[in-house]
Image 1 (cartoon, helix red, strand yellow):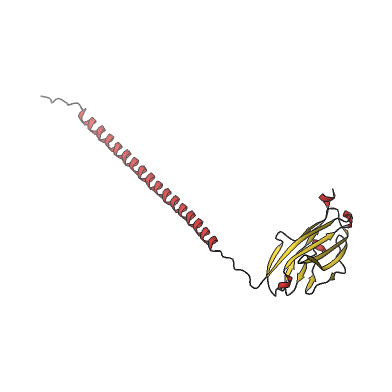
Image 2 (spheres, one colour):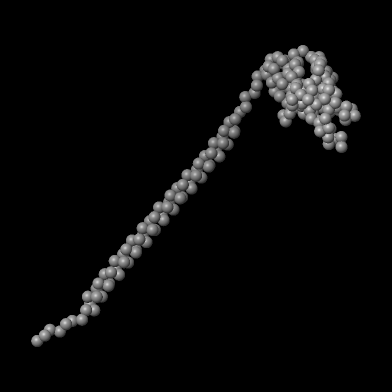
Length: 203
């Protein structure tokens, strides 16, 4: 029951980031609990080659309340969490290569009898952001688009040819009917002339 209704910590659907040296980054973390919270303890920790260094910590008294105060133990760190969305995220200002690594968002809800929960976010610091090569994507999209266009052109030409053939066939039928009708009329006239009886001359 506790497992189904317990506290959950989340660092987002994509728990890692590649950021430029000297920039400011957001380390996201939210919590959720079906049974509610009371004096929820949380902290952020940085994994320094296997040694966990505390970044910040605080306690949230209950649902809908902001943590106060928030103790911060690392330079260039700002807590920006809010109770509106169960948010306990932090900002890292002017990051350096020393900030690169794994950050753990930790939470413990006394309502769960001291059970611990955590989620990890990985930060990678680079000199310059990599440019994504979309050449293959463009080639595939162009090939698919060309194939679709070719298929549509083929269908249009096919329909046009069928339409022309239908019209030609229809015209032939009409001409055939006209010729047949003319022949019938001619035969009728000829038959009427030949079948007319001759009147004998009076002496």
